[in-house]
Length: 163
Image (cartoon, rainbow, N blue to C red; front, side):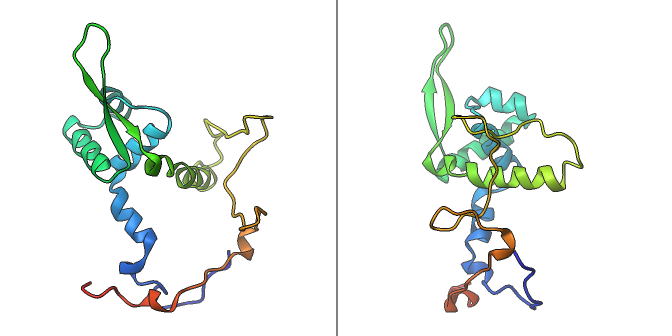
């Protein structure tokens, strides 16, 4: 993707920017780490607590927020000989974060990993070929990043009234 020309402000006002809205919606580092763990299959409160080392009060708050936001749902489960407990499962909206999280993982491996071998790689189930996140056009063809540009709607640069 080409470097955009110099501007004094973004072509999309922050109040109309869906990317900015997603940052607000997803929350902070702890929320993102909970979602990451959930994408790997972690569901139970205690498992989130142990894996992430997150304080219990923070974990309870973030799980409540993620449920309220519609990214996770709470279900009851019971292990024989113990009291009923809650598990947290990704909704369709939460599951849809898999692609952007994998894109961030791919970016991180390249720019943050400092040449270390990644602890995980993605492969196609059917025949084991490596898989990566890429730009794809509406016809399913891979598009090089330098062939992608942004088109803007006329209204995008003005704030939503009341902001």
